[in-house]
Image (cartoon, rainbow, N blue to C red; front, top):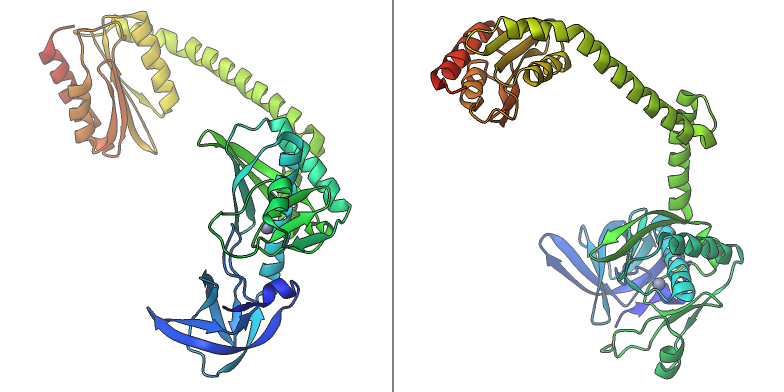
Length: 398
Ligand SMILES: [Zn+2]
C-alpha cells in the first residue's frame, strides 16, 4: 500500500520518496513509490500532474491501495523527489469543495440527491436523478455562497457506520473494506468522499451556476468555483462591455435594446415585403398574361434570391395553372426556382429541375411543386431553361 501523503498534508507541494517498482507499458513507465502526494483520479476529481525527478507525470491511478504514477520516461534513481502541478491541484480542491457545498445545500433545502459529480477543466457538473425546479437551483447557489463567506472549517472524520448512516446525505459503496472517510462542513454537509479539498469554505471564493439542462429525465447542473468562476465572470464581462459599447447603454439596458432592435427588424422586413410586392406584382401579372403553354419563364438580372422567390410566390398565388421557371444571375452565380401553386397536383417540376441544375453544375432540391438551387455555370442558363421547358411541355399534363 502506498502511503497517501495527500491526505496528511493537503497543502504540501513537494515530497521525497523511494521507488518500489518501475515497469514499462506501451512506451510509458508505471512507477510505484513508497509514499506520494499525487492524488489519483477518483470520485469525479481528476488526478494530479507534475514531475518526479524532472520526469513528467502524465496520469495517476489507484489499484488495490497502490498508487501508480504513469511517467513519460524512466526514472534513473531509487530515491526521488516529486513536485505537484500546484495551481491545477489547488483549483481542483476549490472546485471539489464548492461542489460539496452546493450539493449539500440542494440536499438540505430540498432533499435532492446528487447521483454523480464530475470536474472537467473549469467545469463542475452534477447530476440529479429528477427534474429540479429552477428556483431551487438558484436558492441553493445563494445559500452555498453564504456558507463560503462564513469560512467554515472542513473536518475529515473516520466515524463508525452507525453514525454515517444517521448523518450522511449519501452512503459509501458497500464493498469497501477501507475506513469510511467523511468530509464534514458544520451546518452544510456530511458526506463520504475520497477526494482532496481546500480546508475551509472561504477558500472556494465563489460558487456560480453557469447552466443547467434536462439529462436523461433528471437534471444536470453546471457550476464554476473559485478561480474558474472568476475567469468565467471576467470573460462574460468582457463580452458584456462590447455589447454595452455597441448598444450605447449599461448592462441593465442590453435586453431592452435587443428587444427594440428585434421589433425594428420585424417592421423593416414587413415594409420590405410590401415594397417588393408593389414593384413585383405588375411584373408577375404581365408575365402570366404573356405565358406560352402555361409556362412562365423569366430571368431577373442583378436581382437577389429574395426578389426571385417573391416573384415566384406572386406568380403561383395569382395563377394556379401556370408553372414558373424563374432565375436570377448575380456575382454568386445563378439561382433557379421552378414550381407551381401547391394545389396543382398535376405537375411535378422535379425532372425539369434536375436536368437544369445538372446543366448548371449546381445543387438543390425540393418538392413536386417547388424546387430551388444554385449553379455556377451561368453561361449555360438559357440552355438549362430550354431543356427544363421541353421536359415540362413533354409532360403536357398541366
Ligand atoms: Zn469530495
